[in-house]
Image (cartoon, rainbow, N blue to C red; front, side):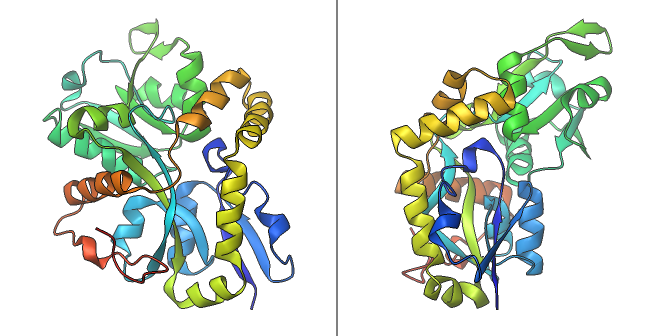
Length: 286
């Protein structure tokens, strides 16, 4: 049976599949591409066997997934691709106001709700919408945008139409907001496999290929090449993309796990960390 790997075409995932396809047997493995929310859904339904998924979805569906240790997308402070754009200069002023939520992510949506409750003690009204910043802010007081769109909009920081005319929205980086609240890194995504396909994936060399591709993709020359390619694609200076890739954390260290554990405790009711299963040790970490 062919194994199916899910891939996300965001700049931050490029080091993972830098040369992944070349390392695998094309007759035994195929790829599906989509945004994080699609990867979440497809892994849960069994349409794909392995993918980088939202950290919170890995926890919500722990009985179905095995997490690969040492692989993540995390940040210590500002992440630059999970941004709340707001017409309010102070987050506290969003209490009772309408915030548009991206339809691309689960972890970031839950993180915003945690920050509103635990850091700012506010209760906005949330609405999931198509991710398109101008239309989101035309109808709402705030807009949560992720991925390459957030990197572009945050870098350009252009004036947009507001209820009071054209203006520059205020920008809150959720990675930075989390660090200010907890002092911990934030883990946005992990690699997870369906439990019933784990041994097939391992025997086919998929895990080994993924780790090797990631290490190759994180070399300085590789990241510089990815930055150059994506800068042209996104219409951004190469230096912006290069710095972004260098600031991310990809190895799911003990500190990243501690931040993840704290987040899941705040985001999920009655969360039990030991439900998570990690490949290799077949045991929960921490």
